[in-house]
Length: 115
Image: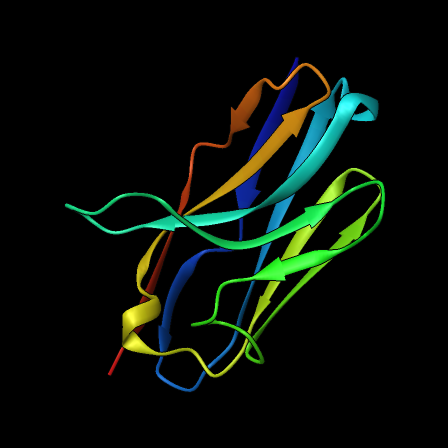
């Protein structure tokens, strides 16, 4: 089992920056992929950035490439979000999948970007 806890969401003006943090605990040695997804009401949850723990390869959604940066430090996962736009407003979820193909989600943190 893996537990994920997000922090760092909030309200920011367009053009501003925020850093989200995901603290992982439990069987983190079994995690294969970690990343961030976001979701707006009425839409499906979408991948923002995802990293392969074994290779450190990072995949970014096209809409955030060049503005967001994913980083990992032991049991913590960070999402540095720069040049934020109103369309980045969403609930952001930390995500992990382990070697048994079990998916884990955090509780989510709200990011609101005002125009």
